[in-house]
Length: 187
Image (cartoon, rainbow, N blue to C red; front, side, top):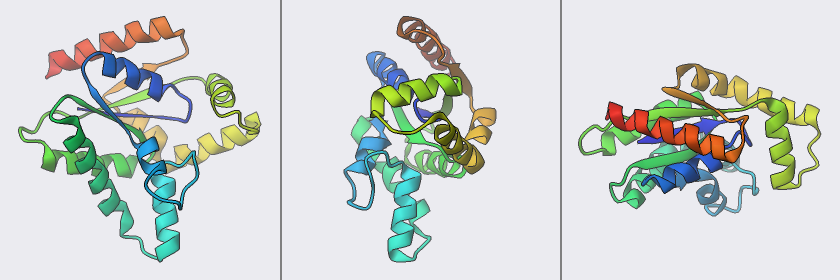
C-alpha cells in the first residue's frame, strides 16, 4: 500500500499512472473530493475541503472523521489490490490516514509513503500548462511555502521513498518501475 504525496504539480498523477500500469489500484483523492461537496473549488485538496467543512459548520471534528472515510473508501474500492492513495499535503493527515488503513488492512500490510519531488520552477511550468492558471511564480512559491508549513517538508523527510521528477516521462517511468520493484521486495 502506497500513500503518494508531494507539492502541487510535482508529478503525483503521472507517477500514480505508472503504479496503475504495474497492477496498483489508484485512488486520487482530488477528483473524489471535488465531487464530494459544493463547498470546494476545482483545485481543492483534502485539507481545503476540511477547512471549508470546519468553516461552514464551526466544527473541528471533520479532520479525523473525513480521513477515516477516505481510507475506508479507498480500501474498499481497491478490492484488495495493491492500493495507491494520492493527494495529501499535511503530515498529520498522512499519519492519521496510515492509522486508519492499519485498522482496515486484514494482514497489516506495510504502508509506504512515497514523496514525489521536483524543482519549484519545473512544478510551476507544469502547473501553468495543466491549469491554465494566472498564478505568477511568486504566488506559486507562496503556495508551496504554505504547504511546507503544514508539514509537507516533514513528509518528505519522513517518507519511505523520495522520487525526484525533474526528468522526462520515459525516465520517470523507469525510475518509478524500479521503485515498485524495491517496494515489492520489501513486502
